[in-house]
Amino acid sequence: MSLMAERTRLGESSFGWLSRRRIVVVFWMAAIVAVATMAYTGPAGWDAQIYWRAVQTIRHGGDPYAVGIAAQLAFLSRPHPSPSDHVPFTYVYSPMTLPLLRLFTAVPGWLLGLLYGFAVFSGFLLELWAGFQMAGAWERKWLVLMLPAIAFFPGLATDDTILSGNIGYLLYGLVLAASVPGWKRGRWFWYYVAVVGASIVKAPLLTMIAFPVLVGKRQWLPASATGSVGLALFAMAARIWPVEFHEYLVAIRLMFDEVHDFGFGPAGVLGKTLWRLGRPYFPTAIIFYVIASCVVGIILLVLKRRVTLGEMTREAWIPVALVGTLLFYPRIMRYDLAAFAVPMLLIGWRTFRKAEESVPPLLPGRSFSWLTVGSAVFVFCFLAANIITVVGPVWFPIELMVLLAVFGLGVGSAYQPQRPGSFFGFDAAHSLFNAQRMQDAEDSLDH
Image (cartoon, rainbow, N blue to C red; front, side, top):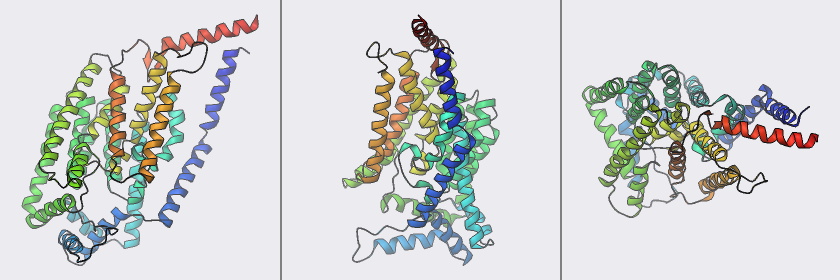
């Protein structure tokens, strides 16, 4: 058997062994056991408890906004506050969700908790499935083994986000799953329906209408109509529930002014920094958000033009456009990053694969190549980010740095010249060159 055939056979058998269904099942079982152990031994469901308290308040005829605001104000007015105490969170979702909460009051508590846990886990699986659809055939062989780890590394930064039980997992799962028929077959109707439905719970999710504009054809009008519908529903809530809507706005204001929960987006980090310096964050953070969104929008539209001209593959463009869309979100949290973990991972992998294949080895005759350098830098940044997340200062905006770094990798990779035959970072001409080099080595061994 030839040297090249032997190496190919060994590589394929290795990947085949790693990709067996039972190995994937073992990985998933290990992840589930680990998450269950973390939930049993430590805090869990802190976001889900907010929803549960809101349901209980409505069940007893109360107002979840008023109860939450009163609890926060009482906490903040304590005569001898302790720095270790955490401000209680209140219900900060649109009054349009109140009828749904009333329906939940008829469901037994144990069943409601079970159903909600299943819904969050299903949303997590939908997020992974949607990201998995963006991977090429060869990429799926190693990506399928890494999907269980996404629960612990949302957005490539370690965190126990999934234990929060935040409804964002379900909302993003539905939106991203509905996007797959859109960017694959141009069918965006259910995506727009999912975005409008998600915006009823979290109004800022209307920013997701930018994604079909970036990757679809003639989507400006449908996206604008979807945004108008979402804004109209938001305005209707103010007329149907005027008291609750006012309390809803007060709860959001307290979240920034008193709880200081700004998120990890560019404007959020600026707002948190200004607050730490004792300076007012409004309207500086709002102005910065508008400027940053315009800059990101211009970059994305320029890249879309390159895709239209055939200077960038559509397969490479989709995860970059999706991560760029996240930057439009005004208050990015860890559970927002979790939904984009797989596209971020693909961007990093494809960037370094492309760099390794387009640049010759640093030292002729040795296997030390740019892939080695790129991989070392990537591993260093990955480890540094996660170490800082665990033991570093809480004020360090590592989530934003990781998000911007990955987005920068995608943008930088897009501006590298494309060569004929490249697909998902694998260049046909380079592969033929490697094959010929291996064949020459084999001939020399035969002689």
